[in-house]
Length: 183
Image (cartoon, rainbow, N blue to C red; front, side):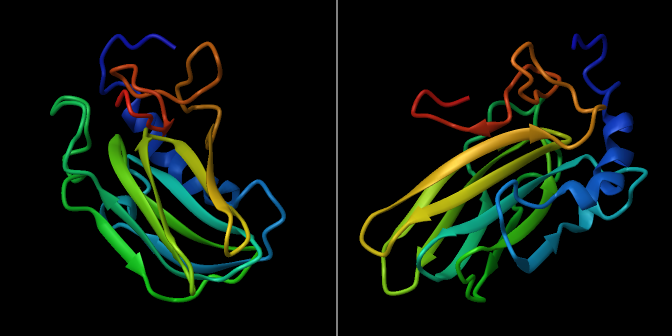
């Protein structure tokens, strides 16, 4: 999708974020949501420009805590949501196997997801969330050998995507996992 005006698509996405909230569950056999955070900037369906980060426990352990925090490094001031800096939420509630936490947060924004496995290690992953994108972060494995996987998809058919069907923001930044190369 080409963008004539980088803000033209945002009003379309605002309504789709709340309408599609039922689609904001993980794409694997998760049994229930443990905790949900909807940022104050994502509560009005007429003005919200947001995305969702789902952090799921797909392992044979319990997650001690889960944190989603806006990164200090963002791609540039023109592309990020004005309320991105400072966005942060940590749930200290345990997440048993096959359960998940949901975060609805401002987009476009770069985030760091950190999980602590009960009696185990910490894992983190840098992400870039675009408007109308759902990122599913799965922590897989067992207490001694575990890894994070990331899947990004559009929340609705109004979400702009590139030729590979990956959601993008008006600047062309892709939604999903950030590698060492950055944005």
